[in-house]
Length: 314
Image (cartoon, rainbow, N blue to C red):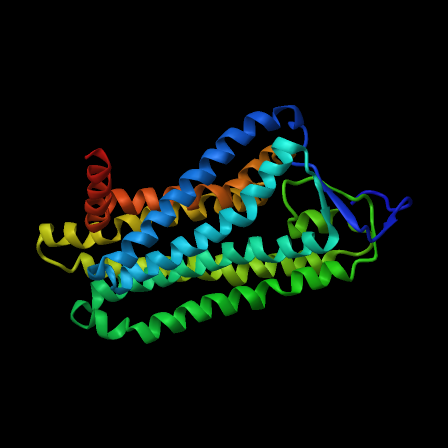
């Protein structure tokens, strides 16, 4: 951490740098960001409308998909418009309290999405291991409890972040070298001992993404064990096909996190602008790709989308 000889008191306004080092290219970055936002909103809104209208889709797998779409819509809504404001209008200033609000909600929705993916892995586990009891085990009552657990965990894990930052009294600068108010980005410009803040940041990752990924891997290990006990290759293929969309979404969601963690373990230091771009991918790409994956790979969704396009063509 740099010297705090010229520290400043807790500022009323922070300045978000966007993507440091690539300020001249902000206009170009705004194009894919805007397209991601439009595709994510249209895709997830379409998924929600189809599930709401089609009564046959009111089953656990699709209700969990609806939860995922709600979280994805929330995630892009709290991230992309603020970034576009920076890229298009140079609106880099953000109040201290607004920064704290962003610091809570953006990672909260990310943690919620991870929790929903774990719930979907459990859904696939029950579908493979207990197909005859599927709707009994995954009752609406259990789905509500799972949704509340996902929400409660996110609130419990992320509430300390703005509280801890609020207690910081001095900073090296009021400029945050990021495109949004990330907790660790603010910690890096704080003065004094920040070891407790770093430990908390690691605990958030372990208690959310690490926990969920461990149990997702465990669930799919048991799923594979059950599938390979099926004598018919055709039946195995059908069992695997029910998990295909979810596996694609999991790989897309967790791969940037795994890449960043492995890079740090191996001592590879990325350029700051590259790190920020990859961090933005955490929040931008999954909400855009998830509805495309489920729309393409799920028969009921594909039929509804084709029906919509057919009606528009007429």
